[in-house]
Image 1 (cartoon, rainbow over the protein chains, first blue to last red):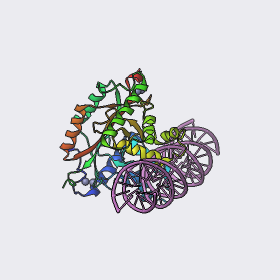
Image 2 (image 1 turned 180 degrees about the horizontal axis):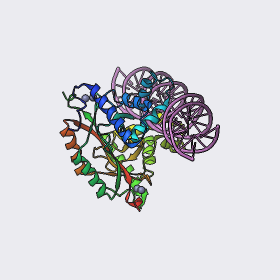
Image 3 (image 1 turned 135 degrees about the vertical axis):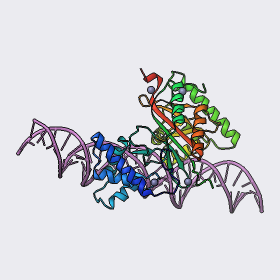
Amino acid sequence: MTARAAHTSHNHRACIDDALATARALCDERGTQLTPLREKVLQIVWKSHKPVGAYDVLDELARSHKAARPPTVYRALDFLMAEGLIHKIESLNAYLGCIEAGAPHTGQFLICRNCGATEEIVDPKLETALEAAAARAHFKAERKIVEISGLCARCIV
Amino acid sequence: MTARAAHTSHNHRACIDDALATARALCDERGTQLTPLREKVLQIVWKSHKPVGAYDVLDELARSHKAARPPTVYRALDFLMAEGLIHKIESLNAYLGCIEAGAPHTGQFLICRNCGATEEIVDPKLETALEAAAARAHFKAERKIVEISGLCARCIV
DNA sequence: ATGCGATTGTTATGTTGTATCATCGGGCCA
DNA sequence: TGGCCCGATGATACAACATAACAATCGCAT
Ligand SMILES: [Zn+2]
Ligand SMILES: [Zn+2]
Ligand SMILES: [Zn+2]
Ligand SMILES: [Zn+2]
């Protein structure tokens, strides 16, 4: 498995610390600037394994950063997406920390409609099937969005 | 092939007529009401093979229906989605006529970033791969969103 | 010191989507 | 016929999501 499943109980502090350390290392290597503001936003996005809306990030950010405004947040989110550190969940208009930062990819997501927990999966067979489907239609695939909603293992009961 | 490819030239009037006829037949069979308002919205969505935003629909609708307001359009779109006559393209916040109305499914889409043409595909192998990926993660899939953006055959040059 | 580019501040606005209550109109039954 | 129900639409207001445009700041290279 590439990462802790979203639904398992775990010491989530470790998730956050790992994500932040990885982000610092990647940005350092690339010469991009993971500023304190951007790092704070990344930390907020990683507060849980549920996608978080931009305005929720804003509310949280504003607690420690009174100047925060919508553009403050969207710029940070744009940077983090460009660096591959977070993904946008299009069907929720919300953002989620990436579990495979550094390996460029568009994510594949399993979104629980009951508890909201969203697991990013990296499934090579699915990736292949997506490429093949596009190829059969003579289409040059660039960004491949997969968002599957339903019930997570924990919520199936 | 299940339908005309979005990028091929064709008599699009036939697309619209087919879609409206299918919609009337389905709603009649189900005892649901495809009112003139809803039919008009469906026709507007089908004006092209490009996804159309709700407020674009509103602008168009308002030309013949002065009372039209956002709820007017969203209610009609919600009805048409519930009947499986249109799909929402989540990554564009826009709506597209369904080419397989009557066969319940969540669509798989190829979205050209150059010309905007969006083709709905029905690819059983891809469907299988999605199911398998969810199953491997012990996830009960309900809605499966696939939106692949890139370049259509015509725009690859 | 000066200019440059990247980042952030600041104000305003654009775009997408809902909540809520009122009104209309056909079918149904007393 | 008159009253009732219910689905559809009208109408007003607002919530949620996102960007435009310009100013200020700061590190750094000339
Ligand atoms: Zn965690
Ligand atoms: Zn769940
Ligand atoms: Zn057509
Ligand atoms: Zn194209």
